[in-house]
Figure (cartoon, rainbow, N blue to C red):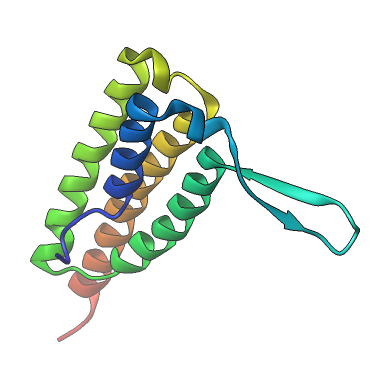
Length: 129
């Protein structure tokens, strides 16, 4: 489970909802009242973006490990990015800004994962024994 890329959940959820219930992604799920008296409506796609951002933070934290599971996580995160990119380019229902931002999150996960792991490995190699 440690090697499972968490953003795959968001990509799979968005893909499934876009195919089965596209109205939910654009419909208001709940409204958040603000101190100013205004309200902030959250659509289904917005909710998935918030969940994706939270999971991206967890993924960056998990990237600090240099274990075999972390390396496998980086490879699987790359696969999730490729699948999400193909979905964006090929499926008409995915061609919107919300899913584009989810794809950018998967790309950020890949870049951050490999960058943090390489930096950690370099620091471990340069440390005197």
